[in-house]
Length: 203
Image (tube, rainbow, N blue to C red; front, side, top):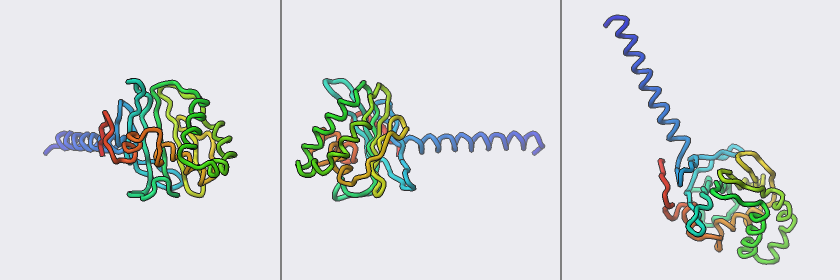
């Protein structure tokens, strides 16, 4: 084999390896797609790796409202609201004000916890109202709980604030995955107990 043929062969091998690497990176970055929205397979915070458990679509009056994904580092948990890392990530198809989000969240918290429990976290709930920002179509909002750190509120990847209270975190996540979530079917989808509508998992 002459020098030119050898160089051509090496170029082809390099191109093939580049294609394989690109495919691997793309498949690793996006674990699931639902209604055109991608969710990564893993999320890392404070050195803790959490894996996407499931995704779900919320509709209202036949219109898409948002899609959500749930992450945790637990394979199986007897208590979804236990003291372990967890994350809810949401992308919106509609505009919604921070005030609306805050009021609805408080309303659903009260359904899941007692008055005594709610009174215990009143100060944290007051702070929460400052962290729910106005959201526009395409915005992504997340709630991430890390034991010993607290619940992080983030908008489009930018940290807004942290509330350092375990009982508050339990009440907040109960809105999504508690005994009386605002949408039981959505809860089952994001924790991986039911298939999402229109999603494409690529694990």
